[in-house]
Length: 256
Image (tube, rainbow, N blue to C red):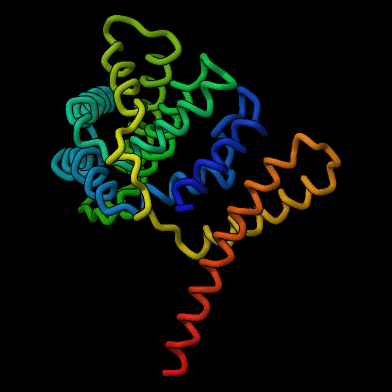
């Protein structure tokens, strides 16, 4: 079992445990892991830098605050993201697919909102507000007036996408088509996710959360939980083995 399958497990738990109003909106292990996967893949970092962050930052660095137009920058950014949909990296596409399939089974009318929240609220907006997270340096860093513009752009892009998804019009249909495209069923090559990695912090959080979840399942004397309990225990075993392997490698290095 690879780390991407572990992410899938926690996304499904998120869908089971949250209601329509809180789904993927709280800081949970599932939302943290989704962010972690986008930060760990080099293709994602390159995409976010070149398609999302740098076009916005170049506008901020070149122009004074009084001539910056939030609506124009936001509109241009959305168009650029849509126009470069073929460059959308595998991690984002696979996470979008997992969200679409998991949410669609429980809330059939909510999956597109969830996919847009993952991409625009939890990926695009933080990248615009904190470019340094993605390795982008810029001249206007520390300029409070321009920082406010960055925040306004992030809010504006989220508002526009949310309206497009909840009340689609002819003008906003390109956004809907884009979300449909990036969340489609991945092909065999795209779904090969054995090279996705997880940092120690998130692996430890996964282990602790799984142990608590398994403890709850064992307390609940419901036969229908047996399959779920087995699945959770298999994932925990996989993570524990990985943790022990890392520990042994660290000890070996210390002895050298």
